[in-house]
Length: 279
Image (spheres, helix red, strand yellow):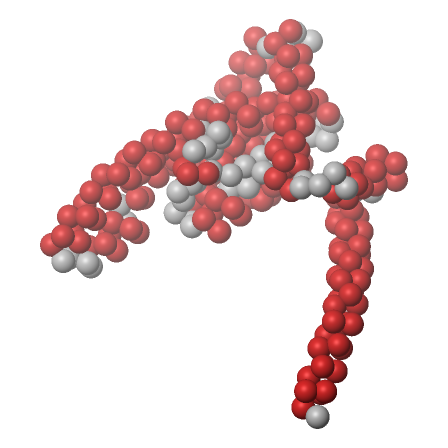
């Protein structure tokens, strides 16, 4: 599968908007456009295969479902994961003739995403370092009282940082994607030790992402029952993610109504007390 220059440029622009600190802002950029699940659809649209893009994005999203950047410390960079890792994974899957929905394809996508994401930390810290230059210019403008210059510092100059550390690397790496896939096919056969190791590591990575999520959302042992209910639906009843979300919404409404019923006696008692006080 070939990625042409127009597609590579579009991927580079998306990488600029979704990087952290990102030109698209934290809400729209890093936490929306930069998430692999959303990026999978965007990359699929750009490359002309939305179905494969979403499947690959979903496989990689499981690993980074709880990715946060506390204090600016990053273990992986979403711009690289989403707009370098996903295109390369799609090229690899199509180049090797694999079924996108197969476990092997998902394992490869997870492994490539993890490798590129770790490499992408260099892009993150590179962007942050170059941005220090613009911050210095901004402080000088504040000292001189030239506050209008801050618009340039905040919204103009950071584009240089992202062009250097987001746009150009994304364009160059994705343009070489088909060549990299050909090298993989030549030097890393599917039945070789290297590819088997890659698939084994890739199959373990989603467990890491789920474990990080559990650490953040589980406060008490009974919470595990709610969490594993979705796995039970998928394993025993064959319910997909959309069906599981609908069932989860159903139980959320029931829980909401139960909680509201618990509050009614207290609210009614308070109203009676107010009436007695008025009398």
